Image (cartoon, rainbow, N blue to C red; front, side, top):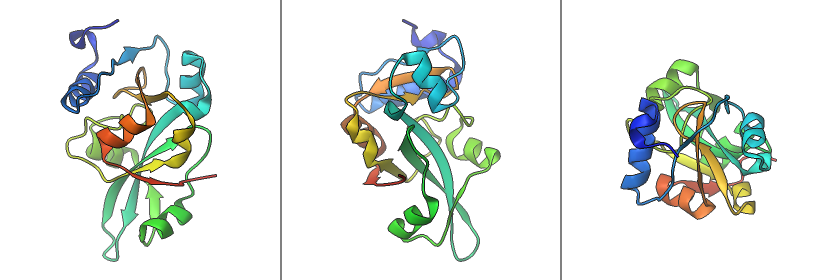
Length: 166
């Protein structure tokens, strides 16, 4: 068990956001990377589908502006950006570039948490995550994670529940 002072700076920010949301979740630090859902599931000895991937996309508006969108998806499948764009009424949704992810979240790809960003992000939550009693999400770095329930994920992000992939 780590104290908040022992966590990396980005994870301390996430831990503080979790506490502010009244979520009693503890960020753990893994000795090896959990940058991918498969790596995280192997390290935690859980199903890959129970990993709540935090993926940053951008919706592109008519003027070409790229607006960040956080998609929390089950590690068991990929996001169908065409279908999701249609569901959300967006013209197009593209994967965010690394610098866009960092600017929107303050975190790096492979360690993006659902909270702890400089400003709240519009969030879509994969309905497939409801299949698991316990979810694991990144804690701000590729080596940190925390557990929560599906309902807690919805509560802390204010996310919109949708089918995001197959």
